Length: 287
Length: 297
Image (cartoon, rainbow over all chains, first blue to last red; front, side, top):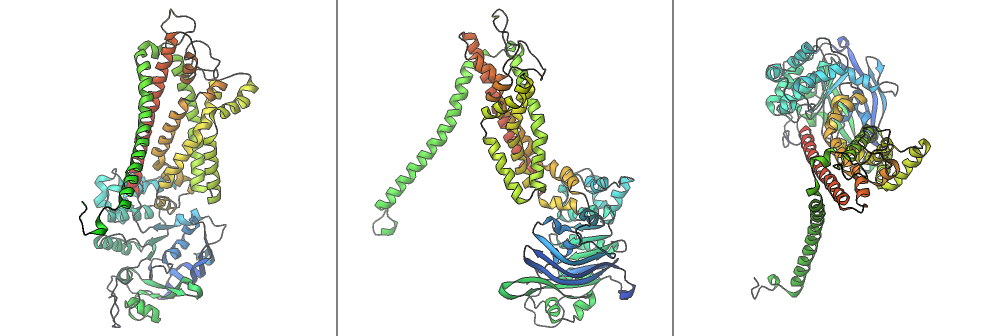
C-alpha cells in the first residue's frame, strides 16, 4: 500500500473526493440487501476474518478498502459462496440476503451465484467468441428468448457494444485487457443478477480502462447493487457511496486476521473518519 | 592459458582431473543418447529393408488365404481386424477415461485423487498377457467363443490409464479462473465442466488416445487369448474372432516358406510406420493444445 502517498505527514486526506455521486438518502430509506452478522472466515484453522458485521444497501456502490491481506477478497467471496470451492475454507456467523441466510449448508451455492454475480481481478473471458462469452451463460441458464437483444443490451451496458459490434464472432482473447474486463462485466450482468460483486476489477488495467469501468458502474447502479473490492483509494472515493475499511489485526504468536474497522458514507470515511486507523490509512500514513 | 604468477588461475592437477572426469561423463551421456537413437534407426532400417519391398496394392487390399499359393496373398483381413478391434477399444476407453479424469480432477478430494492416480499407474503396469488372460476368463470362457469384442475389451483396459492420465494432466492446465468465471454466473458445476473445462482439454485427450492407439495396435498377448482362432477372408463382424496385424506377424514369421516370412516383415513394416506416425501426431497434438491453453491463461 505504500505506493499511495507514503511519506506524507499532513492530516490532509490523501484522496480528494470528487465524484458525480448524489448525496446519500437517509439510512432508514435505504433498502438492505445484505445483512452480515459476526462473520468469521477461516482457512484451515487460520482465521482470515473475524467478527465482521455490516449492511449493504440496494442500488448503491459499496467499496471495500484496506491493505493487502486484510481479507477483502475473502469477504466478498463469502457473499456468493465462491469460497465453497476452497476445500479448507469454513465460516461462522450469518450472511442474510434479503433476510434469508445464505451461508447455511442447505442453501444451494449455484442458486446464490445465479443472483449474486461476480467479476474477478484478472479478466477471464472464455476462449470463445465475444458473442458466445455473453450468450453462453444465458443459454445454460435458460434465458434464450431474444438472445441477440440480450447480448446487445449487456454489451451496451458494459460500454463495449460500439467497439465489439463488428467483431462479435471473433475470439474474445483478441480484445485488450480493458475490453476483456468489460466483456466479463457484460457476461455477468447479461444473466440479470441482483448484485454484482467486483474483486479488484481494475487492478490489472490502465487508467483509461479503469475510468470506463468506473463510469459504467456509476451508470448501472440504478439497476444493480455493486460491491467492489479495491486497493485503490481514489477509486473508492470516486465510485463508492459507502466505504468499508478493513485492516489487519495482530494477535499472539504472530496470528493475523482481517477486521472491519469502520463503515460509513464514503465522504465521511475520506474526510472525517472516526477511527484513528482509518485516518492513518486514508491519509497515506499507514503502510 | 596458464600464466605464471597467477597461482589461483592456473590449471592445477586437481582442476585438470576434474575437467577430464567432466568430459568423460559428457561422453558417456552422449553415447547413451546416441545409442537410443541408433537402436530406433536400426530397428526401422532392418524392418524397412526386408518389408518395404514386399508392399504392394494386393498386399494391402487382398486377404490372406491359407494353403493356396496360386492366389495373390495380402493381409487386408489383418488390417481390417486390427482397425475394428482398436476402434471399438477406443470407443470404450475414451469416454471412460474422460469421465475418470473429470472425476479425479474436478470432484475428488485430494486423498481420492492420489489413490486413483496410483491405481491408474498400477493398471498401466499390468502385463498385457495378464490382461489377456483375465479377459479370457471373464468373456471368452463363459461364452465358449473368441471375439473381436473380447479383444477390444482387453485393449480398452490397457488404453484406459493412458487416456485418463493425459486427460488429467491437461485438465490440470485449464486455469481455475475459467471455472470461476462460469461458476460465478450461477452455472452448475457439471455444466461448467462440460461447457468450459472439457473443450479446453480436447487436444490433450486426443494426444492420449493417439498414444494409446499406437501402443495397443501392436499388442499381441491379449489378442492371443481373445481373437486368434480366425476364419479365412476379410470380416468386419466384431462378434467373431478377427485376424490382426500382430497376430499375422506372429504366425507368418513361423512359416517355413520364404513368401510368408516376407509378408511378416511387410506387416511389421506397416505396423511400425503406423505407430511412428501416430506418435508424431500425438506429439503435434500435445504441442498444439499446450499452446492453446497458454493463450487462455
